Length: 54
Image (cartoon, rainbow, N blue to C red; front, side):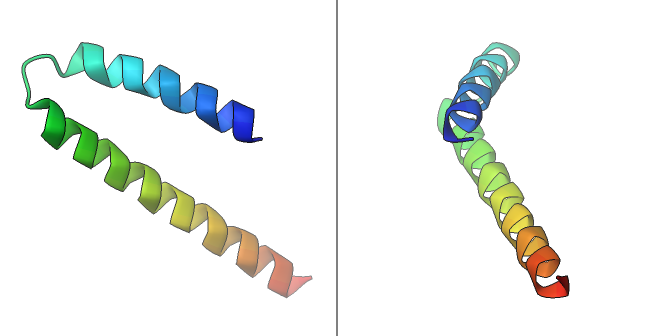
């Protein structure tokens, strides 16, 4: 699963770089980082709820 996530992040980085050429790179990187952290937290919460219900 770690390899899959790494590949997905690399592909996302390429798309973000291509689509945000006119924006500040630091701001864009911060937004992407925040988005990934938020999604990871949601995934962990979902996993915890699922394991508690079993």
